[in-house]
Amino acid sequence: MARIYMVRHGKAAAGFGEDMDPGLDATGKAQAEAVAQKLAPLGPLAILSSPLKRAQETAAPLAALW
Image 1 (cartoon, rainbow, N blue to C red):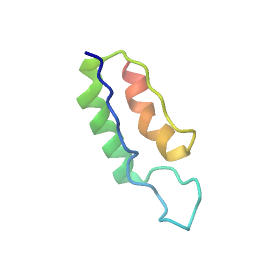
Image 2: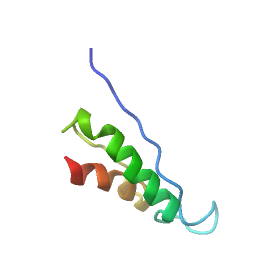
Image 3: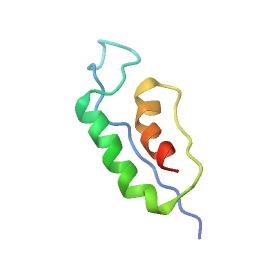
Image 4: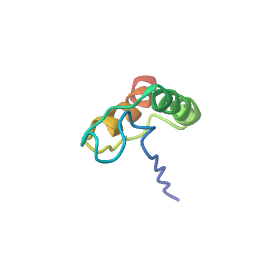
């Protein structure tokens, strides 16, 4: 059976309406690292991500591990 793992981006550096494409803040970066460590044993698998900075920064730690 095929599985799809969906991950929401980590905490963004700016709130809604402040910046249309913020990166992650320190908490968001820690969240991205934590999810990467959790999912690392499952890969390598394809990673599909939005082009938004916060999504790219969330996907990057996992991509680096795979």
